[in-house]
Amino acid sequence: MNVAEENHQKSALFSPLTLRGATFKNRIVISPMCTYSAEEGIADEWHLAHLGQFALGGAAAIFTEAAAVEPRGRITHGDLGIWSADHAAALKPVTSFLSRQGALPAIQIAHAGRKASMQRPWHGNGPMDAGDAARGEMPWDIVAPSAEPVKDGWLMPNELTVEEIQGIQEKFATAAGHAHDAGFEVLEIHSAHGYLAHSFLSPTSNQRNDAYGGDRAGRMRFSLEIAEKVRAVWPENKPLFVRISSVDSDGVTEGWQLDDSVALAGELKMRGVDVVDCSSSGISGTATAAQGKLPLGFRTAYSSRIGTEADITTMVVGLVLHAAQAEQIIGDRLADLVAIGREALFDPYWARHAAYELGADPRFGDWPMQYGWWLERREPLVRELRDG
Image (cartoon, rainbow, N blue to C red):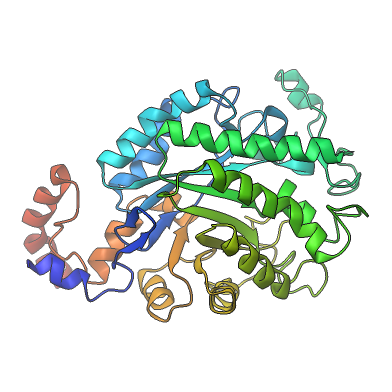
């Protein structure tokens, strides 16, 4: 056993985790992050370069941004899609490169529901307007469990019929098949942030009085049936994640609450879901831009309780910024995986730097050979300069 291997065993963050037939070489996952840069949902060189840098950066698994299961399920005109074989083919270079670098290629499949047909964030991040029309981007009809808009001034969604609900569920299953064909090893269903599945879960957005509404069991039905249909086509040896908003709004005691998420997680586990990805908020606004000041790792309170009470593997996302912080999260079993999002945009080599900082890879042995041999040679000089 070499020095690097010995040191790896001393770090909880850099210990492996096996789920079904997939082994995560460490506990660091790159979170889905929309970049709004696809054409008709098709990935291109941008997506290869964007996602590839995180594989070079040492994360165990790298998620694509949310990939829509149908065109009307996109958030914006620039969203990634996975509703056809052509979309799968465009993603094969991405999965091939990630795999060759030792990372698990992962994909999040999604439907934006009533938060679809929006502007790209740099154009306003709201309902499309004349400026978007001038760019050739026109709004489209959107759907939801109930005819309730996100906010005043936003598009009014069409209430889905039961037949339409079941049709969308089948599109999730079809998308999972395309994801397998594209070479992905991990799949996540997006049931958070106010998008379609979350809007079924929340009593603030689901006003139905049929089998897909009413009490908690009725409101969970849409997400649970999707999990069943996806698990039926997603290979048995590949792990399945579900991202949830653990609460509708952080610090608010109305709507979907943590008790509900614990119950949902238990039901998801019975349907073959392996990991609950614990996010929060977004039912009537943004979930990714913090509303007010929040403490580092604030969602670990959600992941810890969900993991313990539902007896399920959890991943936590949100304001995990520092290596020591992530090490403590895993070491204290507050979550089993940490998802790094915008901090990875700031530092795509976050995982490599964390390994160095924690002493898990002090000699750059886990870096790509093209980089590591140089870094090891320069380290004595750099260390001398650092130490004065």
